[in-house]
Length: 231
Image (cartoon, rainbow, N blue to C red):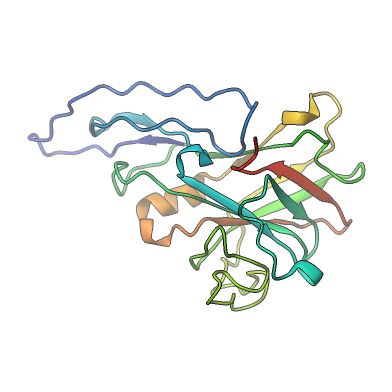
């Protein structure tokens, strides 16, 4: 996530350090947008702040939900995330935006990267369009299921499918997934451009309930990814 601190006209605000961008590690371990703790000091006004997150430091949580016989199952402590086309398996991800990133900062770019596991990570030789929608209600990693977002609170519509209540009506990110044939399938990175979503969360942190990834291809296809618990 690349976030420049907003410029200021207040002459008394003096930065105490000069930030240098963090280095994103190679995609060899857990998924999503990598982990580097932010510096202790506030970034200089108008400067560029680079932040990366994974579940290693607790800043990222994830799970998946599915209907049918396993609709009451929670997978928050599992090693894999799953997305299946149709109204089927969907993945939930939430990143805690560091509070030291000033509210109102401009997000230059934000990427969500999912890595395939040891197996090829897909069923069949089919592509799949995946869409990411902002979630509008809080949920718990170790409690969310197809039926409920917490053990005590159900989704308005099962599967977090009620637009305007559970989830945004319009996708904030999309990309096509494809069978991996020319890259080691055990850690292929699929990156999503989530700049617009993260900008909304930085501008209004109270709205950050993460996103849900759904397959939107007519053909029944499933892709699996490493979760933050993967080792």
